Length: 308
Ligand code: BDR
Ligand code: CA
Image 1 (tube, rainbow, N blue to C red):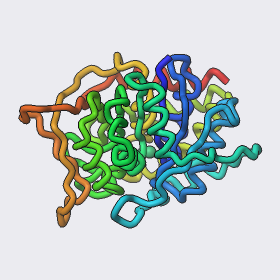
Image 2: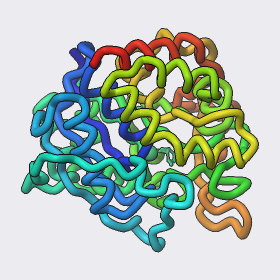
Image 3: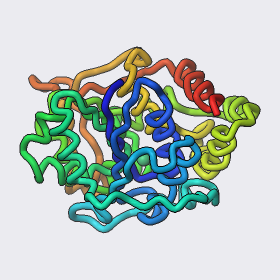
């Protein structure tokens, strides 16, 4: 199995992404690292522990607390999208976070699994940027970095120009994208989230009909995102974080992919946090899917949710 760390602002799709990392036998999840993002930090930590419980692995993976704010800018929540991120569900257990800071855990695990560790970053990139700064070897120790963030074609979700994860901490994204990681894949909002990860009413009904612990958790935790996305004109809920973890384990879901140099807009009046994907640069270190097999991705998620 692939040794993995998932760096997350745990709410809704982050929870489902964690379920993949916890339950897919191809994953060896070594740690969950928490970063400021979607909802209040303490709520996100609760959501991560709840997800471990729902997966039947309470206490099974250490949860490390990381950056509580972006590097430079004030935190921007997505509570209008997610509510508390889990539809009011609460855990029963009392496990507590690991003592070690998330950034130290990232640096240590990358060294322990040098050349083999995959880091999947599905929140703002604050912790990853801090790990880059903390240990010069971190960048070379990480075998692959999968990022959910940005937009190839330019459409955003938090602003017309910016995707949420990059928008919240663009300075961190800038540090990470300049750091020189050998293998980087970005799962963007536009096009691939919209092309391949939308679960409309028919798909949600299929998940609901499973009647498992996992499917009940999913439907309830997903409702706020579903309603928000639909109000935004998308025909269902979006699942880019889940796709990111899955691609870290199996990239045969990618149908079409480009290679890019990626820059982050740090100053734009209307475009702060926008990403510029340059397919013409001489050096193009970032691979970004332009299309995935969305039907097969949905089937994978549904079958996983059927298992318990
Ligand atoms: C990203 O923002 C979050 O709300 C989602 O979990 C995802 O990581 C999408 O822009
Ligand atoms: Ca996320």
